[in-house]
Image (cartoon, rainbow, N blue to C red; front, side, top):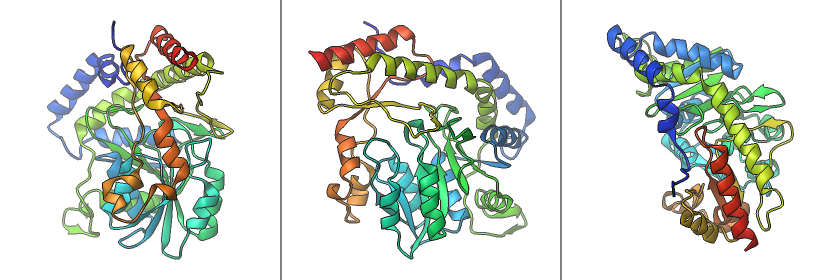
Length: 369
C-alpha cells in the first residue's frame, strides 16, 4: 500500500520544474548572486501580496523574527511575550537577540495566545508581544493588539505558517507593527532551502531591518548599526518568485482539502477539530486535530501507511534549554494538554481527494472501533 505523506515539498517544486530551472539559469548567467535584481523584485511582489508597503528578504524565518524584534527596539534583557505552544524557533528568535521569552498559555479551543493571560504576564521590562498564527490560523489580533496598545509595546506577528491567511479581510503580515515570514521548503510558500522575509508599513522599521540584515551597512563604507549577515540570496529569491506565481492555486487546494477533512471527520467520537477565530480565513499549513488517545491513533494510522506528526511535543518552554529557566508544565496547562493530544494529519497541495478519504476512514475506524 502506498504511503500517504505528511508533507511533500518535492512534488510542489517539481510541478514548476521548467520554470525553476529557467530561473536558476537567469541568476547563473547574471553573475550577481548576492544583492542582484531578484531579491528586490521578490520583495516588491511579496509586499503587495501582504498588503503592506515594505518587505525585506532575509535568510530564514528565525532571522526574520529576530530582526523584526530588534527593529522595534527589543534588546538584551528585555522581555517578550510568546505563546507557550508554537515552534521552538519563536522562542529561539527572542533568545538569539539576548531578550527573555515570557511564556503565555494558549486559548482552550484555539491555537493562539490567550489575551487575558498575556495581560497578566506584562511587566515593566516587556517590550513586545509576538502573536503567532499557528498552523496557518490567524491569532486573535484585535484582542492581543488591545493588550499591546495598553502596555505601549509592539505587536509583532510570527506569520511563518500563515502565508495568504486573512483576518477580517486583511492579510496576515499587515496586522501588527511588523511581521516575520518563513519560506522553509514545507511552508505554503517554500524555497529550496532556508529563506524568510519581514513585512511592515513603517518605512523606518523597514529601513532598520535592511541595515540589520547586512552588517549595518547602508553603504559598504560604514556600518551604521551592529548588524548581522542575514541576507536573502538571489537564487532563493528567484525560486520564490516562481512559486509565488503558483501560491494562490496551492493555497486554494489546501483550503479544499481542509474542508474535505472537516466534513469527513465531523462528529467523529472523541476527536476535536480545528476551531478558527471569527472572521478568519486560515492558510491551513497544518491540519491539527486533538484526540485523548493520540499516540494510539498515530500508531493506527502508521499501520495503515499514513504519516502523521506532532506539533509540538514538548512545547518550547519544556524543551531542555528553557526548562533550565524554570518553566514547568503546570505553568501552561492548555499548551501541555495540546502537546499530549494534538496530531497533524497529512495536508499539502499534492494530496489527492482519495488520500484524504483514506485518512478520514482510518481515523473514524479507530475512533468508533
